[in-house]
Image 1 (cartoon, rainbow, N blue to C red):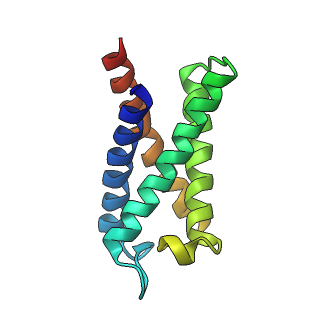
Image 2: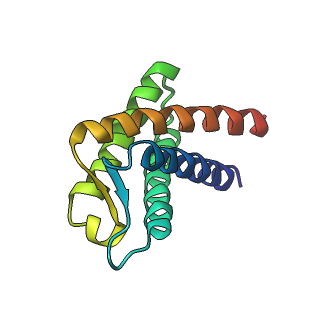
Length: 129
């Protein structure tokens, strides 16, 4: 149940950050294609990034690894940047429907996602205790 709450929290946080990114810099981040509605692309992208981030948490737990908060945030940042770039600049783009103009856009969005996910993780960890 804990990881379900964390997945839902990550999904909501990612959705908000991605929506804000598209609203603020809409010429650099686009959701949707001719076949994919913008809302569907936003939901699919947020869910894909949430799964990638949750996979990191599950792998760390399975291997009994404890990371310091700064190292955890760095790992999460790399996963978020990689997930955004893979979803937006590879053939997965045809199925997901997100587009970015350059790699540095993925880096900036990755920073926002990492901060939102770190806050969500801290909140869900406090609820767990």
